[in-house]
Length: 623
Image 1 (cartoon, rainbow, N blue to C red):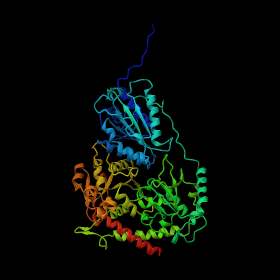
Image 2: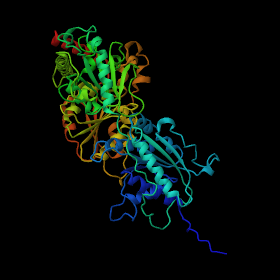
Image 3: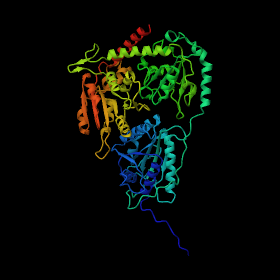
Image 4: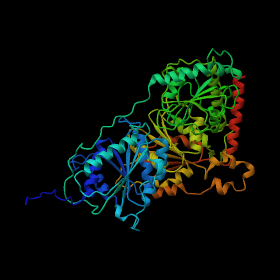
């Protein structure tokens, strides 16, 4: 009887599998991993701890990984989101960031960040540890149905069985990692986003003595990225659109400055640049001589064609009323006047959406959806009515002057004063923050009023990098996102501008353990003791005031200084305009909070006054 030789049994299949997965992800470009501690995820935690060691201490076979540890999974998810957003703007280019959790509710706490990443197209790898299959449905501790927990919000979901040490397990893990990274980056689909690998592990969960497996490429796939659509087809499509519609659009009823001197085929056009539009939106506007209506996080706000107070000009019949074509890049979400423009029956809406299967068209009015900007548009081959851009620029300068006069400064006629000095309003704070930003700086701006105030007042020739969680526009996770951005872009000065409720909602994002890398970030908090965004909407109408404070404004009375002290974070309180610029000018190293006391009582009236003053100024400028 012949002897039978067998492979020596792996004493810790979970450890080996975790190490192979970390090797594969590093080979595929993953540089940052965020870990929330737990027991079932211990195999990954030990592997990542090895990979995070300095070069001269790292075990043979372990790749180099930057590890970030956070105790709260919700914060960890948004930290990973911020790191991934930052990666798209550093020298190495966009790449996925992984986040690791244990089993149970830890996984569910990732869901807000997953939804934001899904709607914003941010590549995340969700590595969630799980009980092995035989323990599921048995009432075992910390065990629930994790596969499929994120539903349609992930690009790929895999329920990975617990390893047992079979010969092909390493190859299969590398193959799965290749598919996961390709799906997260949108290499095959053009639709980046989160990917979920639910990784079952059996005990032992801690490593036994032994080396790392030899790095191997067996199972790794070189996935080529899918290219953009054929340029010729897009150009031809737009040419057909322009040729077919130019006559009717150029003769549609529009008066005033835009109507005079209109050339044959010239259509009054504006470029709307929503979140993530990119610099190409500015290139298109300047090439064609079109006004640029760019949101702060568009990546396009700057230059001579950018109109800062555009949302207040859209009601003017000579400007917004005369628009007959809108070219949309990015995803516009900030302004109701813009959405009304995009929904008008007399406006041709051309959407340029290079990524994903869906496209931004909340008004359901897009006539053409393109995958890229046509060459004809980039070359400025589309005609513009004589005086069209100039009318918008003239009105925009008049609007800016009116806004400045109303927001005022120390001693000016409309400044609200307290005993300590000139009271700060939300738009005045946003203007001050915008004013101190340099082109190389980064601003993470929160939802609700801060981003809309910035949208009204920010004027840049060369804009800084402005990032915002506009995928779902929630207030959750903003501090953690900003911390991730700061960690991912360490050579750039990073600030965050948030409201007080946004700050409180993610105050745990201030927590950083003493063993973790320092976060250089200045957080500017507009503290008006509640949700002033609702004062500008229907609930803030005077006749609805009976319940407004309790169920909409939600005053909290929190001592922000004491809260910061508890987290060991530097805090500065600003109560008047005179103290604002000195506090913003020199953030210093590490994490700091500048709390600015903002007036909320006159928020609705201020908005109405701004609109009225701008309308008068524009009337005087255009005549």
